[in-house]
Structure formats: structure tokens, C-alpha cells
Image (cartoon, each protein chain N blue to C red):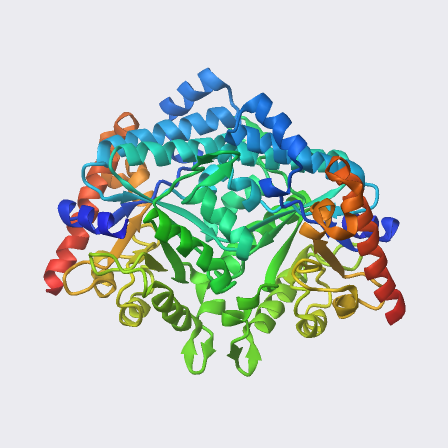
Length: 310
Length: 310
């Protein structure tokens, strides 16, 4: 799957991923209204509204982007119907040829991590049959519990040709409370980065990158430079572009010299584009066109910065 | 909710929680068969089987125990139908007067953590109405991302009178890879413990304990003793009893002098009791009775150890 991701990034000249993180307040009024007429102001109605919103954005952008990253929390907040909309979104994106990164940040021990891995990227046995629950292509993972929590996912990745992105240095302001604390003179995130490199070394695809990727926030470019060197084979998923403050020029050091090795995420900057002054001319009816223009502008920003850095 | 938990622990003389972590292989054949006849060998069939299994265990033990801890991964592996069975289990346990600790180990930043908090312990707005998605009473959380990931949950806890248990030192063998690393001469888990104490200091209930609890593995009794002192107001959820190797006598130091302050979890030891030699006389038909006896034996072990330590 890392090979497919890299192939798509190259073909579309787009080292980016669109975060499908729908709050109900992001969904244009006409879509909410239609969903509530059909399902009432219920969890089912909310799930229908976010699904229709996602579909509009995917239909307007799928030819420009290699991947999407639905944030499962935004679906989980609507309970079981919300998670059905999550699964429907994953399926639809895959039918459009997109690589799906499930932003689930799971992490647990042994058999429990194996259950998460089976449900999200592998197969679960029911009697004589097998099923795939949420069938994402990649998942994000939390490393706090160590190898026991990661290995069950790596096993499934190997079997199913899938991949993971492990949290190393997150984009939020308080990420330093634990991640920046010094251990043997170096911050915790560097030690986690070394483990990511170690976990991934037997999982390198034909593209030269490992199935075991990492997450490093766009808001910490200096750390990105250091971690790029510590984890030479790891693809870095970079959240925090746009709404959280990261810009194209800050992100150059997350990439390798050939312009690969990083995947920059934007969520609100793309999916809420129609609500922003820069794109308000599109109007709520044409929210998909606004998102498309925001993707084009993001690509110009990032590819321009990479070009300039050559 | 911490007050209700403590009240129930005192009333039932039971500082324990039963982990409802059903694998399909734990479910007696007759229950699986019945579910598959009705729903086929499908995810819905699996979900029905684990729900019926849970119900049998709850019905046989609810009068002995204050709380249950369903591990959401075991439901999530069966996709959307599995999560419907999770919600049904939470509701049923609450109808029986049990406190429900959702073992979800979530953790994300700002608005995303707020979405998890709304979906699991708070309310989500849909138009003019409000809904509760999974409505657990407590949830477990992962601290790797720092305060940004915890605060949205604390806000919901305050509004809804609920609580959290934050991972400090987990029970698994590799928990030390990051958690034991020394920062300023002390392991990371002690620093996390200090933060738990800090996060919880404004959330102390009438019982004297905070809404902000912690997770410390039964497999690390020495660390339990130290952390008990670092987090004097924090209730400690203690996994790892039984199947993972922890025994009653090892757990005394997780408790305060009055026998409160800790909640010991057993999952497989209780729910799979009928599959163990010690309880096989009950037979698969009477798996609930086997679980009941295993609860009584666990209570005797832990209360005996606490009595002896007085």
C-alpha cells in the first residue's frame, strides 16, 4: 500500500491528503435540511448529512489527490450511525481510487491491539466466513504502550499489504508536555522516532519507504528536519497545515530531496473552504468547487516551496 | 460518578470490575449457534452472539460487582454491528445499576478530543436536539498528546458528572519501552502520574477521590506503591489481574489504608471461567454460574489480602 500511495503521489504531483473531519456545523444548510427531512433530527440524520457532505468533497477533488484521512472521532461522536457513515466514506473513497488513512490513533496491548488491527485493516472470522470491518488502507497509532501495541498491527500490515503512521511529535500546543521531555539528553519524540525506524526496517516497499510511517506536526518544522534524518525510510504524515498554522515553506524539511517522504494533511482548510473569505464567492451550494480550489491552492503552495528549495 | 462508584464498592465490598472483552472463541457454542441460525455467519451474527454472552455474565454477576469495563476493541473488530452490541451492553449494564468504564484509550487534540468526549460521555447536538452516543460513565484515555487531549474530556466530566482513567503505567511487558525511560532521574510514568494528580485536583468528589483516575498495571506492584503516593486523590484502575499474572497479595499497595482507591479488573479470568479447569464442572451451558464463582473467588483473594495487610 505504501507503494500505491507513492505511485499516486507521483502521478498526481500531490504530496497531500485531505482530512475528512466533518463537524455538523461545516455541512452546508441545504444538505443538513435534506437529511433531516428524510431521517429527522436524529443521529441517523446527522450521519446522512456528513456522508453527503463528504461525497460532495470527494467527487470534486478525487482526481487531484492521492489520499484522504477521515478522522474517526468526528463520526464516533454520532454513535453507531456515525460509524456507519465512516465505513461508507472509506468504501466510497476506495471506489474512487483513493488511499484511505484512518485517523484512529488506537493503541492497546496484545490481543486487544490485535482486535483493533483485525477490525480496521485485517479480517475477522465469524464461523466459517471472514469479514473486514472498516478496511482502511493505513491507520494512525499511539505508541505509549510500546511494541506490544504496535506488533499486532504490523502483522496485519504484512498480511494485507497495508500500513501505519505512528504518532511521534504531534501538532498540538501541549504535545511537548511529555513528548519533549529529555531522556539521555534527547527528547522522547526522538526515541519514539528511533523505534519507528526500528519497527519499520523489515517492511520497506519497492518505493524505498517503509509500511511503518510516522506522524510529525507541521507546526514543528525544526523537529521535522531532525526526525526526517532519524527515520530515513519512514513516510511522514504531517498534520497542522493551514488551520493550525503550518505553511508550505515550513514543510520543506519534512521531505526528502526528491520531493517524496511526506504527506501533508489539511482538513478544515479544504472541507470548510466555502466558509472562508477567500472562497466565499463559490457559495454554500458549490462547496465542492470551493474545496477543489483550496486543494489547487494548497498544491501550488507546497509544490512551489519544494521547487524553490531544490 | 466517582461518588457512585465508591458507594457501590463499599456496599458490595467489591473493589473489582469485570472486563467484558468478548472474543467469539469465548462464547459458548450453543449461543454462537443460536445467533448464527438467526443472523447467519455475519457481523450481525457475531454481534448478537457476544451480546447474548455478555448478558449471561451480567445477569449472573451484577449483584456482586460495582462496575464493568467493556473493551471497545473487542466490539470494534466486528465493525458497525459490533459497536451496536457495545452500546447495547453499556445500556444494559447501566439498567442493572452497574457503573460502566468504557475501555476506549482514546486521545487526540482539541476539537477531535472534544468529539470523542461528546460521543462517549457527553452529548452531541443534531439540529435542535441532543443525543448521547455511547454514554459510558467513565472512559480510559491515553496521555501521549498532553493536556490538549485530556481537557475536553474533563470539561464533559464536569458537566455530566462522569470520570476518566488515564494510562500511567500499563500492564503489558513492553510498557517500559517509553514509560520507564528516565526524565530528570525519574521514569516517564511518574511524570504522567504527577500530571494526573494535577489534572484531577479540581475534580474531587464527596468521597475524597477525584473524577480523574489512572491506570496502573497489576503486573507492576512496586510502581503501584509509588504511584499511589504520587496521586493520592486518584482512583487507580488496575488491569492485569489473573490471566496476565497479578495476584491479590501483589495489589495491596495500590489501595489506601481504608481499602479504597483501587479498582482491580479481571476479564478473561471471569468471562472465560467456564473454559478453565477450576470451573469446568459448571459446563458451557452454565457459563454465567462459572463466572459468578470466579467473581466470588476473586473477591475472596483480594479482600483476604486487604484484610491480612491491615
